[in-house]
Image (cartoon, rainbow, N blue to C red; front, side, top):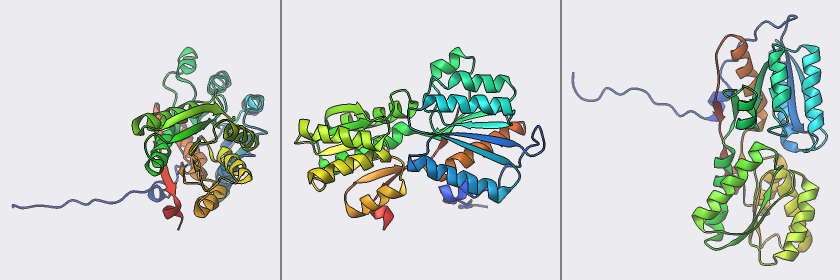
Length: 316
């Protein structure tokens, strides 16, 4: 025998990964397992969509009970802490936790795990040092590479604007790991491609705060050419400020999350790009990972989920 015996290759996309056979639901403490889903602000379209996707997934399966909880705002940390405490009292079987504060939610997560509840950290990573201090150094994280996603958005902005373009960064909540990672990704792109960062400051993930902030930045930096917003909720506020100032066509904006509202803005040319982290599937991935752990698999470290740059050509 000689020559080339070809073995198969196949393209694997998020579709194949999310349409795989579901992980069997383990036995719960009282029959069907009960899953507590702790999200951030449901005023943010990203998390509202995530909740809707999780509820649809739970209804379609029918073999577990889902209890979703969201916050009133992106800085409402006490609501998340109370949610975890309530789930401990209710003795749920699994908690999927997307923390608003990467340090403040470590202690409640440990308390839940000490109570015999499986806890999976997803979307926003709990802080490494805080985990190590709590004896949870290898706790599993299911989520995207936020730094890489922000870098992709920053690189696209740099490609369009060119070297030495003047930009500002609108950061997320400083207490959240994903905010730190997205700022790091934007900074890396700015440095690599020679963007001139005039200012980097936070709007705490909030639309109206970003609107006010951007209005002030336009006065301070009338020659700004681009904006890197760490989530799409803030990007909406930025575009609102640009519209009010009549400069939407002069300033390029990138965001992060790919919520439906910004897709229309990208099609209209009011935003340049965003990053898709496949939010509707994120809670589903967390739940299935938790079931795998409850079924006996030992999982730790980082289960990385995909990110993708989305521009107008992707939305045609």
